[in-house]
Amino acid sequence: MALLLVSCSGTDGADDANGGTVNADGSVTVENCGEEMTYPADPSMLAYDSGIISIALAAGAGDNLSAVASVGKAHDTLAAKYGADVIDGFDVISDKQPTLEQVVSLQPDIYFAGWNYGLSEGLGVTPDLLDQRDIATYLLTESCRQEGTDHRGLVEPWEALDIDLRNIGAIAGDSELAESVIDDIDDRLKKLNDAPQPEQTPTLFVFDSGTDAIVTSGKFGAPQAIIEAAGARNQTEDLADSWVQVGWESLAADAPDAFVFVDYEGQSLEDKIKILKNHPLTRDLPAVKEDRFINLNYSMWVSSPLNIDAAEHVRKGLEKFGLVPESDIEPAMTLPESLDGREYFTR
Image 1: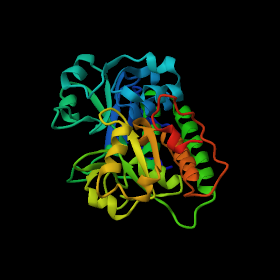
Image 2: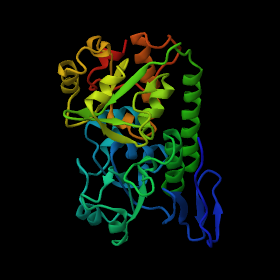
Image 3: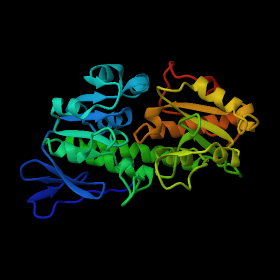
Image 4: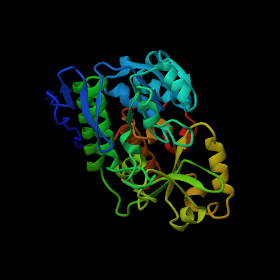
């Protein structure tokens, strides 16, 4: 996992061995989406979205989270990872994307969010608008926009997670703790990579949600890294974006060996499976007829430290389906009882 942190030219500061540049006044300078940003010492933070909350907690910045938004169905998964007392202790200001007025009313030093993760021109919450109101933004690296487009993703997903853990650890948390989380992820990735591999790599399709079109994930989304680590191939790996829409013809053309579902509000697992079993382009696919379904919470699919837990559970699901050889991989995280569909992919 690679480091992307730079010192700010012209500042009298010292490089943290595990993070950004600590300046004379205690502020920290890091590179965020290609831009040098300096953040105040010991900042208060508002975190949007369960994956981003998970990054902050893993990097030791939990005490700096003055408020969070959009926990929703991720509550039980986050509680399984970090403890119910921690998650229940947050001031949750909204179950949806906060408005500009809500963010400004809290006056956090930093809004930790991302493009389409709490930031959007259409909804009137952008880094420029927040900067005009003396609120800094730290952008989720997975959501960094490609130059001249709205497409998201500049680096491969594990590197994006690495960058955010180190940066947030340096800005508001504990750099040594962040480094230990990165080391743990690396160790578990090595075990997955060393596990027996199939002669023919299975293809998985990421089904986020869908009716007329399907929301799925391209090569810059965390599912790409999760699926590869589990020993499979992401069907939409050729799309240079993080989260995208595709047509039903695109899904059916490759006849995926299994489906992985993103579990969150709006469309239940039951509804998604019903759609697949009734749509004329998917109802006769072997993966659909044989119920090769893996359902994990949203917080495990977006960029977060839970991505390694997702990879372990996807691996075991593929073993159950007979798509990859049996291995001694044992998921470190126990999935919450409230998660729908565990019977499809767990033993």
